Length: 218
Image (cartoon, rainbow, N blue to C red; front, side, top):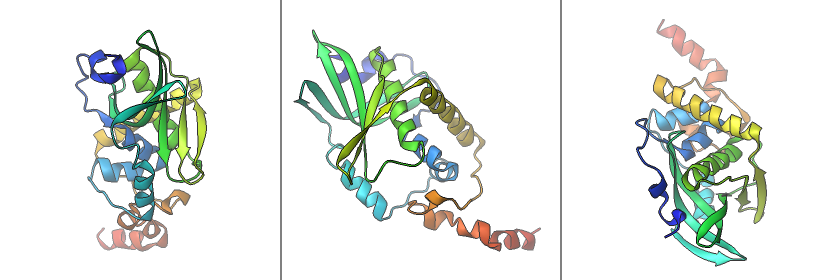
């Protein structure tokens, strides 16, 4: 059995911290309030964009593997990092083996739309790579994001800067959840299309209604 077929086998004595979901790291980079509403308040919602995202993930969400062009393609692979306190699932991990040992690996994340203007997708992918490095004991220098709309892949290089951004984001997300305080709403470009928009109501934060409400009870 190769290490990739039993990812837990190389992780002993799990960290006592509660593992953060990899997907929540994406939410945090997209919007800290969104991550807090999910991670602290337990809120979930959906819209047409989440439906399209689910469709984009449909094939990748079924565990299994196949071989293609010299790569072994493994879908829905559980990922873990004891060092960072992360857990989750990769849409797809492509690996190369030599003499029954994995010598190359790259995560592939499925996204519904175009290349994101923010770092959330790249950081989530880098976090997956850090999990794979810890699990497999090999360097994972790059991964890919598959964009369902264009049916094309974007290569993401995991350089020192992205590693730093990723590890900082993990620490900041953990601090946010530990504080247990949901940040105030702020209207931003990424609010358009957010599945929690109707719950968050960021427009109220800039309309003066929130300020008037606070004044009423102070």
